[in-house]
Length: 79
Image 1: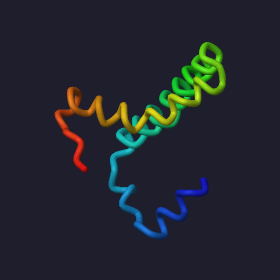
Image 2: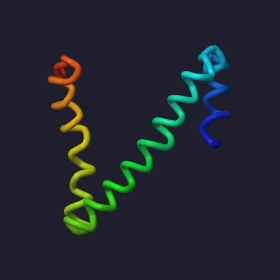
Image 3: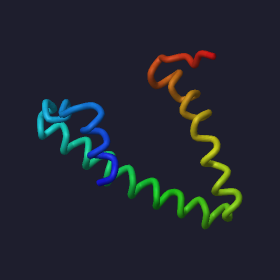
């Protein structure tokens, strides 16, 4: 709600050219599935590891993403 008007003012209405079915799949997957799964798993990590241990995994996300990109996407990190 906050970002959409700023995006449309700066970038224009390019999002209108995207087919509605593709846009809805993206909204459902990113907006609902990923959000719910991440909240549930983060809550579970905090319950199992404690608050300090669970929060440490947030700092590992960039490093793990870079390492997982090698076998999954065939992309090597650069400096």
